[in-house]
Length: 218
Image (tube, rainbow, N blue to C red):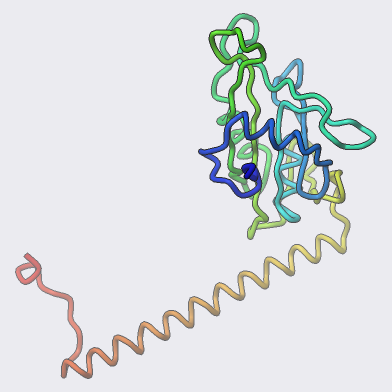
């Protein structure tokens, strides 16, 4: 059974799994996006926009190193990202993504990232290309904003990242308030249960609980 890039443990995903996933020719949508390598910066400049929009909406999967057809939104080219540039090895790809998210998104996001190296030519001795699989969960801290220039709250609409309108912003803030209220109610419920259990324990032991003295605890 093919590995699902949406659910598989990130540390187990390989380039072969990515190739198998791309063979399905799934089109980009609310939870899936492809980005080809940027010839100048390697990492596409709008990757932060996609991560932010995914986090504010339904979560999603972003695969770097893949070109999508602009009409069908299906993958048509899978060159990967170069692991060698200007005769020098490219390193710290995962850290580049997490750093971009930390510097450009408020509140900061930490997506799951997996680098999957492969050989563009089977005769090569070492891997020279890599896919990057970036998985984003719906964020309980949403709404998140991209702050590269003017702060923007982005959401995913179909295969596009769009600025959130006033109605969407209101929904995101109300959802955040509901989650915070649920956390407070859960905290109060757990604390009440803890006090009840402790009181029952004290009554059964015939006295109040006291912390052990340093000598008793040795």
